[in-house]
Length: 525
RNA sequence: GCCGCCGUAGCUCAGUUGGUUAGAGCACCAGAUUGUGGAUCUGGGGGUCCCCCGUUCGAGCCGGGGCGGCGGUACCA
Image (cartoon, rainbow, N blue to C red):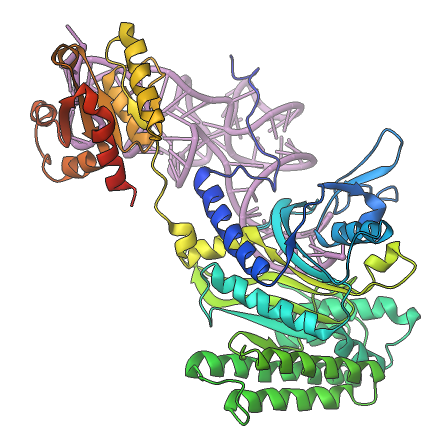
């Protein structure tokens, strides 16, 4: 076909094909996470990719911008449907339905992994289709549920091969922030917009630091490209009170650094250095929230969560209180958590890459209630599977670096009119549970060897007329052969190389399976 | 969405002040070897120079517009 008529093979941006090695790694990773969730007593659930748009949130596509953020389309009855953009809203819908059918007992604890879709600009490590692995407890208002989720998050990360100290689960409570905002006069419905701007600014603390955030809280900030971001318009007094809260963040960092560098053995021990730092942090939060009912309640919840977590033996090397965690701006109502990787890595160009958050979650007491006459509290979190996978590849977790899988044994076609014989050999191998295939291309022997090599075949089976006459087959170990070609045969002429028939044995036909099995088992460890 | 950089073979890139048939390395395929994946030698296939419009006798190169990629920024329920 001429090039002009030819279709260009391409992928929509933000979508990806995933090769066998990635799939295998993902599968192993999901399995490890699943084991942890099961251990904690959560049960599996699957919900569909598509939901009624109204069930997914406040977002309605039939307004000005039909496809902003979410992929939506109309059913033949004109109702709007959307691809899910997270697994939380569908869970809320599911639980609400089962409550109606009265076949569910609260608290309901469930986990689910699945693809979610977002119609937004993709970036490095950001896709428009990606996988999340969530666990949620619906129907418990107790902060014990939140504490448990944090511990489980830590366990899950360690289960997939991230070492203690290479990650940290950060916990905060939205009520603390709400309390401070209320205290500086940003309470009330009419200030909702301003509060949102403040939250957005605070969410950037990691990247912009105190200086940048304080600009965003005030008049606004101009970045290097000259782009101006509008500020929240707070006065310097208000800004100081908020940043005082964030100053406690320094204590949190000190906590982690102390743990990482000193490896304190019993971090939750009364009077331990780490716990002194935590006490200092709580003290600071106490001052920041003083006089606000909701703020003090939030602080109290945080203290209880910390107590539960420490009592269970999870020190600040795994879970810390960090008042700078903001998380999703819309539906979280109480404790929020975020799993961050703490190590730095270099990419191919040698630039330092910070991985940041690989999982996050929090309490969303209002979500199920949207479908119900009564309020239903809930809390949960979500692991970004695709992102975690790249992180695991960087730390070379055994989960993803496992040997590349071997391909099938390839039976070569030496004589075109004896394909039935070769097919019989393949069947014999398969009956013995050995992955095997007949060479189905049309090329000569050299190309067949090349093909087998690329398939990562452990060996090839060769039977030409000579072997047939002698009642034998030749079996060549391709992996040993490749090694010896590099070593023994270096510099040899082609005639010598061919004559050597490296790593190749001739055995009686009836020993085919036995001999192949020997070679395969040699490679399968 | 906004700002910046970039777009030449499958990949990495050359390509002179605008000049005739657009190159290299690697990769791929074939032959040397009608039966051996390496090495070597020889040969070969591959290009709408991202697209369109314009300027020009003439555009890979200059101008305008678009598309795509990368980075930053914003948004991210």
